Length: 240
Image (cartoon, rainbow, N blue to C red; front, side, top):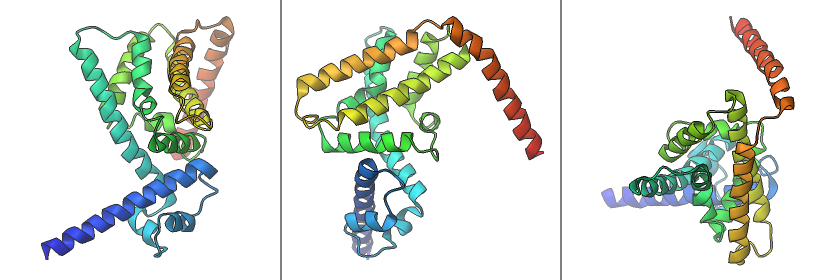
Protein backbone atom coordinates (compact mmCIF):
# COMPACT_ATOMS: atom_id res chain seq x y z
CA UNK A 1 0.00 0.00 0.00
CA UNK A 2 2.79 2.40 0.91
CA UNK A 3 4.47 1.58 -2.42
CA UNK A 4 1.30 2.53 -4.28
CA UNK A 5 1.14 5.85 -2.43
CA UNK A 6 4.81 6.46 -3.20
CA UNK A 7 4.28 5.86 -6.92
CA UNK A 8 1.25 8.14 -6.93
CA UNK A 9 3.25 10.82 -5.15
CA UNK A 10 6.07 10.52 -7.66
CA UNK A 11 3.65 10.82 -10.56
CA UNK A 12 2.07 13.89 -8.97
CA UNK A 13 5.47 15.50 -8.42
CA UNK A 14 6.51 14.70 -12.00
CA UNK A 15 3.29 16.19 -13.38
CA UNK A 16 3.80 19.33 -11.33
CA UNK A 17 7.35 19.75 -12.61
CA UNK A 18 6.25 19.19 -16.22
CA UNK A 19 3.62 21.89 -15.83
CA UNK A 20 6.14 24.31 -14.33
CA UNK A 21 8.66 23.77 -17.14
CA UNK A 22 6.00 24.04 -19.86
CA UNK A 23 4.51 27.19 -18.36
CA UNK A 24 7.91 28.81 -17.85
CA UNK A 25 8.81 28.13 -21.47
CA UNK A 26 5.54 29.40 -22.94
CA UNK A 27 5.32 32.47 -20.70
CA UNK A 28 8.91 33.40 -21.54
CA UNK A 29 8.35 33.04 -25.27
CA UNK A 30 4.93 34.64 -25.65
CA UNK A 31 4.05 36.58 -22.51
CA UNK A 32 1.84 35.72 -19.57
CA UNK A 33 -1.50 36.82 -20.98
CA UNK A 34 -0.97 35.29 -24.43
CA UNK A 35 -0.79 31.76 -23.02
CA UNK A 36 -3.84 29.78 -21.92
CA UNK A 37 -4.00 27.12 -19.22
CA UNK A 38 -5.13 24.66 -21.89
CA UNK A 39 -1.96 25.30 -23.88
CA UNK A 40 0.20 24.73 -20.80
CA UNK A 41 -1.56 21.44 -20.06
CA UNK A 42 -1.02 20.31 -23.65
CA UNK A 43 2.66 21.34 -23.68
CA UNK A 44 3.17 19.40 -20.45
CA UNK A 45 1.63 16.30 -22.04
CA UNK A 46 -1.44 16.33 -19.81
CA UNK A 47 -4.59 14.93 -21.37
CA UNK A 48 -6.59 15.90 -18.30
CA UNK A 49 -7.31 19.62 -18.79
CA UNK A 50 -7.90 20.06 -15.06
CA UNK A 51 -4.33 18.99 -14.16
CA UNK A 52 -3.00 22.53 -13.89
CA UNK A 53 -5.96 23.69 -11.83
CA UNK A 54 -5.55 20.68 -9.53
CA UNK A 55 -1.88 21.39 -8.84
CA UNK A 56 -1.90 25.20 -8.74
CA UNK A 57 -5.47 26.52 -8.74
CA UNK A 58 -4.88 29.50 -11.04
CA UNK A 59 -2.44 31.05 -13.49
CA UNK A 60 -1.30 33.57 -10.86
CA UNK A 61 -0.62 30.80 -8.34
CA UNK A 62 1.30 28.88 -11.02
CA UNK A 63 3.51 31.89 -11.73
CA UNK A 64 4.19 32.37 -8.02
CA UNK A 65 5.06 28.68 -7.70
CA UNK A 66 7.58 28.95 -10.57
CA UNK A 67 9.16 32.01 -8.98
CA UNK A 68 9.41 30.33 -5.57
CA UNK A 69 10.89 27.12 -6.95
CA UNK A 70 13.52 28.85 -9.05
CA UNK A 71 14.27 31.49 -6.40
CA UNK A 72 14.89 28.81 -3.76
CA UNK A 73 17.66 27.28 -5.87
CA UNK A 74 19.19 30.61 -6.89
CA UNK A 75 19.14 31.97 -3.35
CA UNK A 76 20.80 28.87 -1.93
CA UNK A 77 23.68 29.52 -4.33
CA UNK A 78 23.68 33.22 -3.41
CA UNK A 79 23.94 32.33 0.28
CA UNK A 80 26.83 29.98 -0.48
CA UNK A 81 28.70 32.75 -2.30
CA UNK A 82 28.16 35.11 0.62
CA UNK A 83 29.33 32.45 3.09
CA UNK A 84 32.49 31.87 1.05
CA UNK A 85 33.15 35.60 1.04
CA UNK A 86 32.52 35.89 4.78
CA UNK A 87 34.94 33.03 5.43
CA UNK A 88 37.72 35.14 3.90
CA UNK A 89 37.24 37.65 6.71
CA UNK A 90 37.07 40.59 4.31
CA UNK A 91 34.09 42.86 3.81
CA UNK A 92 32.97 42.70 0.17
CA UNK A 93 33.11 45.89 -1.85
CA UNK A 94 29.96 47.16 -3.55
CA UNK A 95 30.87 45.63 -6.90
CA UNK A 96 31.19 42.21 -5.29
CA UNK A 97 27.79 42.62 -3.64
CA UNK A 98 26.16 43.57 -6.96
CA UNK A 99 27.85 40.65 -8.71
CA UNK A 100 26.75 38.15 -6.06
CA UNK A 101 23.18 39.43 -6.43
CA UNK A 102 23.08 38.03 -9.97
CA UNK A 103 25.91 35.50 -10.05
CA UNK A 104 23.57 32.51 -9.54
CA UNK A 105 21.71 33.28 -12.76
CA UNK A 106 24.90 34.30 -14.59
CA UNK A 107 26.13 30.77 -13.91
CA UNK A 108 23.07 29.31 -15.64
CA UNK A 109 23.15 31.40 -18.82
CA UNK A 110 24.83 28.57 -20.73
CA UNK A 111 21.90 26.23 -19.94
CA UNK A 112 18.38 25.90 -21.30
CA UNK A 113 17.07 26.19 -17.75
CA UNK A 114 18.84 29.52 -17.26
CA UNK A 115 17.64 30.91 -20.57
CA UNK A 116 14.08 29.79 -19.91
CA UNK A 117 14.03 31.38 -16.46
CA UNK A 118 15.59 34.68 -17.62
CA UNK A 119 12.92 35.09 -20.29
CA UNK A 120 10.12 34.07 -17.96
CA UNK A 121 11.09 36.39 -15.12
CA UNK A 122 11.37 39.33 -17.55
CA UNK A 123 7.73 38.73 -18.53
CA UNK A 124 6.73 38.72 -14.85
CA UNK A 125 8.67 41.94 -14.32
CA UNK A 126 6.59 43.69 -16.98
CA UNK A 127 3.24 42.46 -15.69
CA UNK A 128 1.30 44.89 -13.44
CA UNK A 129 -0.09 41.96 -11.41
CA UNK A 130 3.35 41.37 -9.93
CA UNK A 131 5.69 43.75 -8.15
CA UNK A 132 8.81 41.69 -8.65
CA UNK A 133 11.22 43.98 -6.75
CA UNK A 134 8.91 43.83 -3.74
CA UNK A 135 8.40 40.08 -4.14
CA UNK A 136 12.16 39.54 -3.89
CA UNK A 137 11.95 40.85 -0.34
CA UNK A 138 9.42 38.25 0.81
CA UNK A 139 11.64 37.73 3.85
CA UNK A 140 12.11 34.02 3.16
CA UNK A 141 15.31 34.33 1.17
CA UNK A 142 18.44 34.47 3.30
CA UNK A 143 20.80 35.39 0.47
CA UNK A 144 18.66 38.25 -0.81
CA UNK A 145 18.14 39.56 2.70
CA UNK A 146 21.88 39.62 3.30
CA UNK A 147 22.54 41.29 -0.05
CA UNK A 148 19.92 43.96 0.64
CA UNK A 149 21.49 44.70 4.03
CA UNK A 150 24.92 45.12 2.41
CA UNK A 151 23.48 47.32 -0.35
CA UNK A 152 21.67 49.51 2.18
CA UNK A 153 24.93 49.97 4.06
CA UNK A 154 26.79 51.09 0.94
CA UNK A 155 23.98 53.38 -0.21
CA UNK A 156 23.26 55.03 3.13
CA UNK A 157 24.68 58.35 1.91
CA UNK A 158 21.85 58.61 -0.62
CA UNK A 159 18.40 59.94 0.29
CA UNK A 160 16.35 56.85 1.28
CA UNK A 161 13.88 57.26 -1.59
CA UNK A 162 16.70 57.54 -4.11
CA UNK A 163 18.47 54.49 -2.71
CA UNK A 164 15.26 52.42 -2.74
CA UNK A 165 14.44 53.37 -6.30
CA UNK A 166 17.96 52.65 -7.51
CA UNK A 167 17.79 49.17 -5.97
CA UNK A 168 14.60 48.62 -7.96
CA UNK A 169 16.35 49.94 -11.07
CA UNK A 170 19.17 47.47 -10.47
CA UNK A 171 16.82 44.49 -10.52
CA UNK A 172 14.74 45.79 -13.43
CA UNK A 173 17.76 46.67 -15.56
CA UNK A 174 19.54 43.38 -14.88
CA UNK A 175 16.52 41.18 -15.62
CA UNK A 176 15.68 43.05 -18.81
CA UNK A 177 19.29 42.90 -20.01
CA UNK A 178 19.55 39.18 -19.22
CA UNK A 179 16.36 38.38 -21.13
CA UNK A 180 17.54 40.36 -24.16
CA UNK A 181 20.92 38.63 -24.03
CA UNK A 182 19.30 35.18 -24.24
CA UNK A 183 17.79 36.13 -27.62
CA UNK A 184 21.25 36.08 -29.22
CA UNK A 185 21.70 33.13 -31.56
CA UNK A 186 25.02 32.29 -29.86
CA UNK A 187 23.95 33.04 -26.27
CA UNK A 188 24.49 29.46 -25.11
CA UNK A 189 27.79 28.89 -26.90
CA UNK A 190 29.89 32.07 -26.91
CA UNK A 191 31.59 31.93 -23.51
CA UNK A 192 33.85 34.94 -24.08
CA UNK A 193 30.96 37.17 -25.17
CA UNK A 194 28.86 36.02 -22.21
CA UNK A 195 31.62 36.76 -19.70
CA UNK A 196 32.14 40.21 -21.21
CA UNK A 197 28.39 40.86 -21.09
CA UNK A 198 27.98 39.87 -17.43
CA UNK A 199 31.07 41.80 -16.30
CA UNK A 200 29.97 44.91 -18.18
CA UNK A 201 26.42 44.56 -16.83
CA UNK A 202 27.75 44.55 -13.27
CA UNK A 203 29.83 47.66 -14.07
CA UNK A 204 26.75 49.41 -15.45
CA UNK A 205 24.63 48.52 -12.42
CA UNK A 206 27.38 49.72 -10.11
CA UNK A 207 27.62 53.02 -11.97
CA UNK A 208 23.89 53.54 -11.73
CA UNK A 209 23.86 52.80 -7.98
CA UNK A 210 26.72 55.16 -7.20
CA UNK A 211 25.95 58.04 -9.59
CA UNK A 212 25.81 61.44 -7.87
CA UNK A 213 22.32 62.70 -7.12
CA UNK A 214 21.74 65.60 -9.47
CA UNK A 215 20.19 68.92 -8.51
CA UNK A 216 17.29 68.03 -10.80
CA UNK A 217 16.60 64.79 -8.93
CA UNK A 218 16.88 66.54 -5.56
CA UNK A 219 14.41 69.20 -6.71
CA UNK A 220 11.95 66.54 -7.87
CA UNK A 221 12.30 64.40 -4.75
CA UNK A 222 10.40 66.51 -2.22
CA UNK A 223 7.24 66.98 -4.33
CA UNK A 224 7.27 63.24 -5.13
CA UNK A 225 7.47 62.30 -1.44
CA UNK A 226 4.68 64.74 -0.58
CA UNK A 227 2.50 63.38 -3.38
CA UNK A 228 3.02 59.82 -2.18
CA UNK A 229 2.11 60.87 1.35
CA UNK A 230 -1.15 62.44 0.16
CA UNK A 231 -2.08 59.30 -1.76
CA UNK A 232 -1.38 57.18 1.31
CA UNK A 233 -3.58 59.42 3.45
CA UNK A 234 -6.38 59.24 0.87
CA UNK A 235 -6.22 55.43 0.79
CA UNK A 236 -6.39 55.29 4.58
CA UNK A 237 -9.34 57.66 4.60
CA UNK A 238 -11.22 55.51 2.08
CA UNK A 239 -10.45 52.40 4.11
CA UNK A 240 -11.87 54.01 7.24
